[in-house]
Image (cartoon, rainbow, N blue to C red; front, side, top):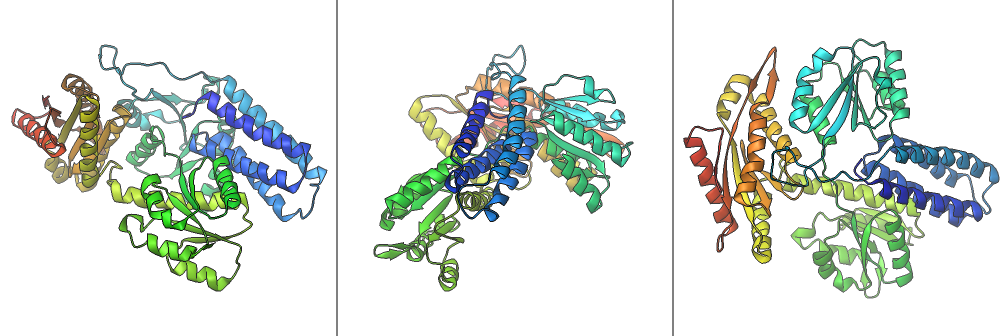
Length: 533
């Protein structure tokens, strides 16, 4: 999991304390606070990669939210509280059992025992492959190893293995009756709280997929899916990229209302900044860089719509979502507000669960849009423009702190031959393989971009030329051993690399040029090598 046991226990304790407070004072206000806590905990479990616990929490959340339509007065009836108490006790017991199996953070380690480069590389990820036909998955098992992913192939005796939750459990339906597959998934889902369960070789009909998802699969691949697609899903789930906290700018002239909104957002893990004067909105946007603006509709001397129209005059804030809050329920007002730059309209008094749900869904979509602007669509790496910006920022930081910095340029050798021989889809797969390997094997502090075509750029802060060369050469060797399956055969590729180290007076553009010149030398000297530093 991507959170520590201590972090999970803290969130669990907060959730249980809200429930205890609700039981001690069974009123609507307390139940609303508990509902917010349930939603927050559910989202936390999802974000931290604990799908088993998340599914249980989500079912509990749905039951809690359904009660809002049934109760109209205090106190809350005892019967529903008793039913919820039983479910929460069972849920809490599962969390306790899960925590008992977990240790603390992994110690510092080296990628290779003989390496002098001690980095914050990802620990080895362990996954299970439950299948009756292990020979069919040999290539996937081999390829996973290059990405620091250890696959344990499990047959009928998988239930006798260790209890530590694997990151992923792949369940192959090939050779199984549908009922046997369902029973197997149910057993695994009940056993593992932190594992993503993926069904393989499933019938593609609606009912079959619906049932597989219902009993515990997090994702399903139908019969005929290319193993490269399965590999892509594995690498993505085993990645370490975590979304930064959601950030909301609150524009509200009432201090009481602003405090209530910020408290509601904080309980759901959302960072916020509040301003009371709409005239300060542009300064606040530039300083805080929020993912969303929560806007009061009526403020002294200014309406929320007018503020939004000013915001939309600035290109950098054109896509920032704006959600209005108002006690006015006029349909005409809401339609006008949305037409003039707003994205959603909530009426006061707001339901805190609904507020958080709207905020997070809007931010999710906003971030997807931003990713499409800054990231390469094929690989998920930084695109050309973003890479150049990241180099400039890294140079500025390194110069200010007096720390080393290296930039490397990589290029896949004889890539045109791959496209000509195996087709452009396979060429794309080779490009993705390089991207996966770089993301999995480099440090969290490094940045990787697709500079263009089959060319990549790697930014290595706090690394001198020797360390950069050593780290990238390990990746070069492993990539050369990576076999790309095609029909009944496979092929291997290599890449060449040029490294440049920052020196006084060198700009980001000049540093990239030096790395590119070193790459050219590596190509001229026979390829499949690293030059420079």
